[in-house]
Length: 300
Image (cartoon, rainbow, N blue to C red; front, top):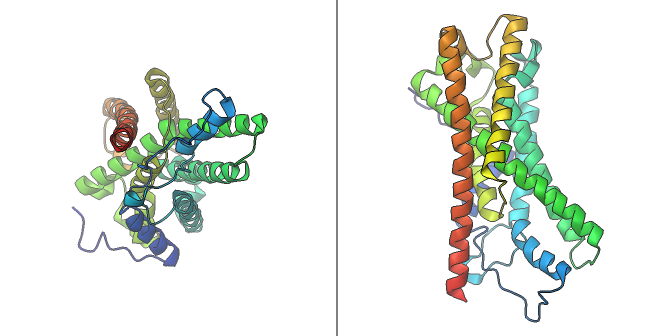
C-alpha cells in the first residue's frame, strides 16, 4: 500500500503551473464547442470545405459564450509540451545506475512513453502554428501538407499516445499499490522526487484526455489500429528480452520473480491490456465528439 505522504507533490514552479492549467481548463468544455456553418459558404469549393473541416481537427474552433474555456487549447498544448521537456530533462539529469547500463533510459517503457507524449504534443503545437500561418490562404499545397500533419497526429493519438500512456499509468499504479517492489523499488525514492514520479506516471493520462477533449481525432480502421498497437507491444517485449539476454537482468523486478511460463502469460496479458486501451480510446473519442455533435444539433 502507499505510505503516508506518497501522493504529496513537491513540485518546482513549472510543474505547479501545468497542474493549475490542467485544473482550470477542465472547468471549461475545451473541444465541445458549438460549430456553426458560415453564411454564404459554398459547399462545392474544396478549399472552403477544408477550412471548415480543419477547424474541428486542429482545435481552432469558436467557443460559444455558454461554454467558454478559460484557457485556449493552443496555449495548453504549449504548456504541456514544455512540461514534458522539463520532466525529460530532470529525468535524464538523474544520476541513476540504471542509466549507465545497457539500453540506458530506453529500456524503460515509462521513458519511451514520455518521448512519445513529447513528440505528439510537439506535433500538435506544430499543427497549431501551421494552421495559424496558413489561415485565410488558398494554397492547395499548404492545405495538403497540413492534412498530412493532421493525419500523422491522429495516428499517433490513436496508436501510441493514448494506449501507451493509459497503459503506463494503469499498470504502474496497479503494481505499485499491490507491491511497489515489483515495479518501483523504494530505493528509487533516493533518486526520483515525488513530483517527477507523478509527472512520469500520473499526469500523462489527464493530459492526453484533455487533448482528446479539445480536438477531434480520426481513428484508423480498428483492425489496422490494433495491428499497429500489437506491433509496438511485441516490439517492446522483444527489446526487454534482448536486454535480459545481454545483461542477465530483467528491466522490471516483477519479471525476476516469476517463472518462464508465467512470463509468457504476463507478456500476453499486457499486450491484451494495451489493445483494450486502444479500443477504449476509440470509444471515448467517439463518445466525446458524438455528444458534441448532439449538442450542436439541438442548439441549431
